[in-house]
Amino acid sequence: MLKIAIGLPTNRLVKPKTAESLMKLVDYSNYDLEIIVSTRGYNTAENRNWITAQAVKKGCDYLFMVDDDMIYEPDTLERLVEANRDIIGGLYYTKYEDKAPVLEYFDKPEEGLFKVKAMGGGLILIKCDVFKKVPQPWYGYKWNNLGAVTMSNDWFFCEKAREAGFDIWCDSSITAEHMGLKEY
Image (cartoon, rainbow, N blue to C red; front, side, top):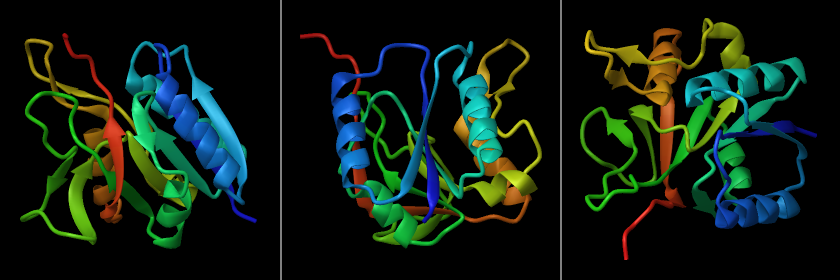
């Protein structure tokens, strides 16, 4: 039986609908699941690195990373595992008025299963063998000389994974909702 870590990087409160999605996913799943929640990191990259190290240390086959503000279907994990890719995620959008996919295309948007240059870490499944071939730190940031972030932690990981020879895949038939704040 596959052992899959579900990593939840957070240093804030988990949204109730995210908790509900996670509970339904766990109930639906037939895998050996290990839930790892990081609550002490100063930033998301630190949380993701700690979660990843725990998943590798515990001998997990996969790490399913989900953010604390995502809503997804109970069969999401099964569908991602069935795709049998080293790195694969579903499609979700930014949580701003001007919605955009949280991924970077190589060329143009496609339907179904396709390779991307980078994707957000809010709903992503990664084979743990990947982490044995990608040098640490797996997650980090790139900054400009004024201290502004020029590359987020998930893009940082995707760049390092591609440099190590891995493809990043998106399955646009697997979707999630990304919850944000809105003034009413």
